[in-house]
Every structure is written in structure tokens, then in C-alpha cells.
Image (cartoon, rainbow over all chains, first blue to last red; front, side, top):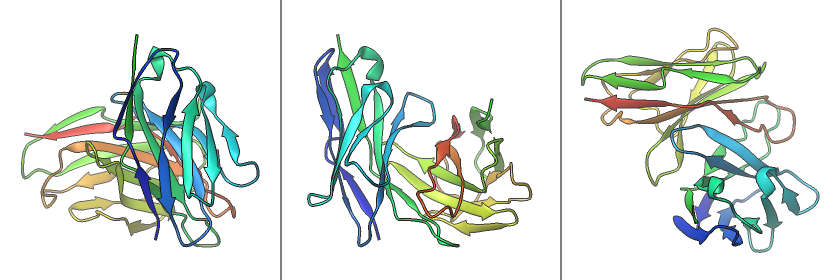
Length: 117
Length: 115
């Protein structure tokens, strides 16, 4: 079984400040990790994903995340945020799919990032 | 343009009525999924289908039904048995069984309100 914990339900920051959204996971097997962003009344858009290889993953809109296996974390960062980054962010984890096995995607509860001018 | 479409965007229903939410994709994805989103609870899986004419229950399937007669389409019916149907419903799709993560891509959602 897998679970995801997003440690902050809301994160307020000022424009051009750095931000970190924290995500911890638990799993008995190796995992794949994802960050999605959701703007109000819209679907989820994939920001970035970690499948294997380099633990530092770069995504769209200047976001990046670092996979830390020993701390079971996958924190999302951006060095300088814009007003347009105001949205809800979801961390998700899945186990490898194979054959007829379905790699279920488990989501955290979301972090609302609010960027103030 | 390839993508996932959901209709309608907003839907109102009276108690005791069944209602069907549409989800169509032209990404040639094998698998499709339905999620329910409530404030502060993230996304919860209702049903998923990995192949045409086959589907499985997710974590909260009670009060919902689906069909998968075509690869491109995965409609969700919210029945009168669903006790608290007011929510935002999201459809997603992905390739399947490639030995790697089946990255899911999402539609724009349908907001259902029961009056």
C-alpha cells in the first residue's frame, strides 16, 4: 500500500520569493513520483515526474523537485514565484505497472499556494 | 489537438435522479480513470478501465457505474444510491503496461451539484 502526505495545506508567499511545497510518501516497493497543478475549476496539469535516474527533476513553469529516497520525500521548489503560480498543487505516487498490473496513482491532499503582490 | 474532453462543465441534478458524465479522449490511450475531488481530500479513485469492455472498482465505487464500449469513451453514471454526489469529477487517461509509470493526463472536470 502507498500513501502520500503533503505537510502544508496552505502556503502563502510574496511574489518573487522562493517557495518549497513538501511531500512525503510511504511505500513497500519502489515508486514513481509526480507533481500536478490545478488552477481553479480546472483539471490537473502535470508539472513534473520522477521515474528513475537523476534525483533532481525539472518541470514546467520553472519548478523542480528532488527525490530523496532515504527521507522518502519529493519536495517541490521554485526559486522565484509569480502571481500566476497561485493554484493548488498535488503530489502523487504510483508503483511500477507491469503486465496486467495497474500502477495505482495515490494523491496527497493538496497544498494551496497563494502568491501575494 | 489531442486531449481529454469532459461534458458538461457544470451539472445540476435533483435528488433521486441518475446523471451521466461524459469523458472522451483522442490520445489513443488504453486506460481511463474517474476520480472524485472534494475540498481538502485530494482525489479519490472511483473506477478505472485498462481495456475496452473491462473495468474495475476503485476506492469509492458505491453509487457509481461505468461502461467502456469504445477505447475513446468512458462515461460515468452517478446513481441515486450515491449518498453525497455533490463534487468535482475528473476523468484521466494513460497508456498502459509499458513497464514504466503510466502517466495520467486529466480532463477539465465536471462540477456536479445536487439540489
